[in-house]
View 1: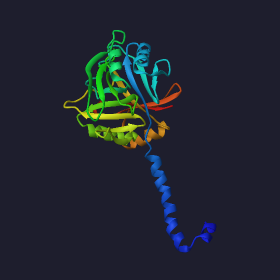
View 2: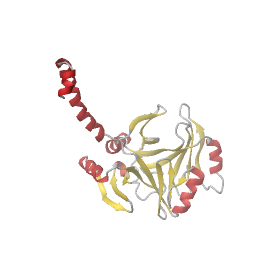
View 3: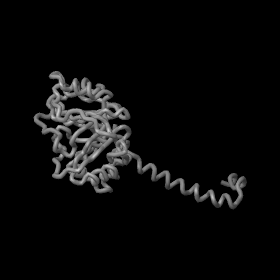
Length: 264
């Protein structure tokens, strides 16, 4: 500091020193406001290996483990469960995938080999994109869209009687960039993945045990993240613990949203 003082006039030094001091707390704030990367969606199916193959063949994923399928940095993970109710009516209503030629994809999905059920034919929504809805062979509701800006795994769509409260809880807990999809639909962005929420006129079912069982965010330091979330009043249903090479924990969110935290 003596060397700096010798090169800078006393007046200028008096102006610079407060700015140097202010950079310390601002940097610290930036570190505590980091967004947690989005990690995975966990699906309940009777045959995890068969479901993984289906999502690789028809949704364009890549094999990422025995029963895991990757879409960029996001994983679809499958757990064995017989008779899980479909995702429709749950707080996690559906997931979305984007394709370059949606008409061709829908024709493929309607073949007997694909086994998907079309619940809404393709339509073009002005100032948004082409979209349609299907159910996979295990009751997962899927929105298929044609959005060149975000190919592959596109979004997660939640439903709740208080969608803004749910989104605020997610934002407060895991960060995310508040943005509008195509300038129209409020959402949170985690890299290329959108998390959206819409209003439900009736209480939605909890996601636990449904075809889409839970969502997953990644934690760099799970114990530190858990302590921060507990300080915010987040309810843990499973404390951090080792799971193979991972450390995981589970929390409950509003409207019955089940969330897994993962340290990889």
